[in-house]
Amino acid sequence: TTWTMNIFHQLKTGGDPDFKDIYAEVPWSEFKEGPDQPDEELLERWKKMPADVPRAFKTHSSPGPEGTPLPEMGCFATYREDLKYIVVMRNPEEAIVSFKPFIESHNPKAFEYWGEPEMREKFLKPTFQAFFDECVLPGFPNMPPEIVPPGGLLTMLFFGF
Image (cartoon, rainbow, N blue to C red; front, top):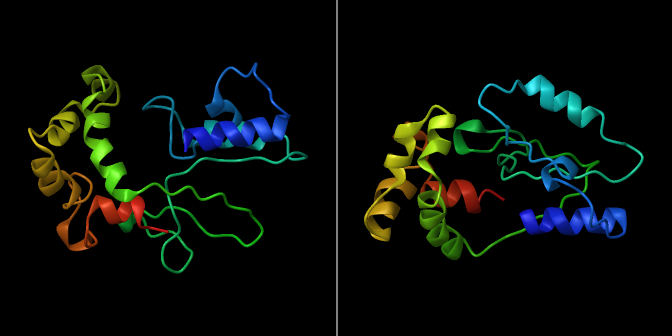
């Protein structure tokens, strides 16, 4: 998705090599810069983006089955007919296999910064099989089992579309 953000920005600007932060150019709607950042700050920043040129927002969310949000399934977006979408798919098997080392590579201080130091430990498992059985299949940590779809995170993160 980050590669797609860069491609979009380059197409929109005709090849601007001097931007400072791709997330300023193509905001990621689920990402906050800090744990105390109010939603209103981001919404105000996005409202100030020029409306006379194409704009893009990165998201890992998808609409629910009816095109509306379904947060309990990790679907926070609303489908709109008046928008254009670029959907990037990755082989879910490869993505979930790379998710384990991705989480493991995060500095423990990042989890502390967000006030979730124990979350890192919940994802650290000695083998991929343990990671899959204990982290992927049950869904997000602390998610009530009755609302976890078959496949858990695999379904929520990669098959929502």
